[in-house]
Image 1 (cartoon, rainbow, N blue to C red):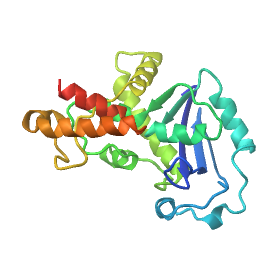
Image 2 (image 1 turned 45 degrees about the vertical axis):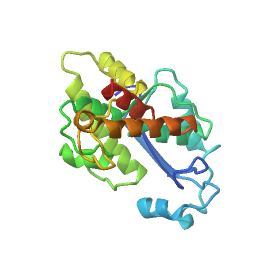
Image 3 (image 1 turned 30 degrees about the horizontal axis):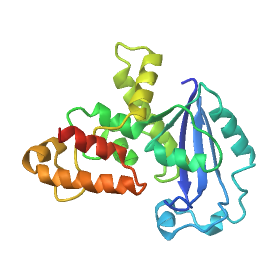
Image 4 (image 1 turned 90 degrees about the vertical axis):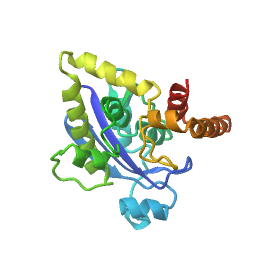
Amino acid sequence: MKNLLFLDVEATGLTEEDRLVQVAYDFEGVEKEAMFNPGRDMEIEAMEVTHITNKHLEDKETFQGSEFYNELKEVLEKDETIFIAHNAPYDIGMIEREEIKVGKSIDTYKIAQALDVKSKIPAFRLQYLRYYLGLEVEDVVAHDALGDVRVLKAVFERMYDKMIDGSTHDEVIAKMVKITSEPMLIKRLTFGKHKGELVADVARNDRGWLEWLLGQKESDAANGDIDEDWIYTLKHYLR
C-alpha cells in the first residue's frame, strides 16, 4: 500500500542507553534489512531472544551515516509516510535516538486491542496474534527483524480488512492513526492477583485493588515513568 512503512528493530537491550543492532522495513512492497555495530555490547537477555551476538556485529558499519540510514531517514521525513510497528513506542524510541524523526504512526498492538471489543484475545504479542489469527506467513524467524516485519504486515492487513467495510482506504488509515495517538482502554489484566480477569469485573469486585494500582501508576508517573494507558484505563473504570 502506498506510503506505508512497516518496521521492526532489534537492540542491545531495553534501557535508554541501548542501541539498535538490526533494522528491517517494508516500504511499498520493497523489503530492506541490515545489521549494525551499536558501539556497545549486547545484553545477554537480548542475545537470548535475538540470537545476535557481539561477534555478529563487530565487523558491521554503524547505523548513522550508512546508506541504509540515509534511505530510511529520507522516507520517514516525507509528510505522507505512515510508520507502522507493533508496540510502536519502542521502535520509535530506538529510531529517534538515531536522530530520525517519526511523524504519523500506527501501532498494531493498540489496534488489535481496540478491535477486540469482546475481550476474547488472551494476549496481543505479535507472534501470538500470528498464530491466534491463523496467519500463513512464509520465510519467518521470530525475533528476527525482517521476519517480524513480515508478520507485522500480515497482522496489519487482517486488521485493515476488518476495518475497511463501508470505509475508504484514507478513512481506515486515519482511524488507525487516531487510535494510536490516544490512550488505550485496557480491558484485561495481564499481571497481579487478578491476572486474566476483565478490569471491569475487578472494578466491581475489588475496587480497592484498582485504586491501589492507580496510586502506584501515578507515583511512577511523578518520577518520570508514565504509563498513560493504565492511568487512563484505571480512571475510566473507577469513575
